[in-house]
Image (cartoon, rainbow, N blue to C red; front, side, top):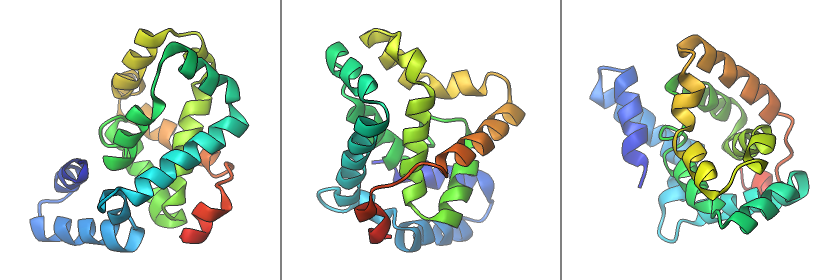
Length: 175
């Protein structure tokens, strides 16, 4: 479902399987990622709905364009949340996002998703279905083509912008 991707990244960062398991348990229990994977995927469904609501306010034309092109945005976003960005973004950028989530709380992940989508608004609006699908599937390679330094820099800027995004109160209060 995605926990394997999170565990794999943790193993890349540490040689200690025991340490990785401890960090994974902390991410699941204390940060709240476990609710993404519980039966019925309650937090995933809540975050996908919140993304729709937030984009309806900040970028309604993008949602209309996706509907017109037949793009099911949630199909892509669920992977972003379930893999905690490891499957779609360069690893230095993922680590910057994880740092921000650890500092600010899990709603920061929602802010990051909305920030990524709104920052790509003009490009996505100019694309047809196949190009949008390709853009989402190859995002990691395009961001990382300038190497690790640029991805880290992009992560910092992304988190800075994401901090300005307002999360619906029912999401923030659940924290």
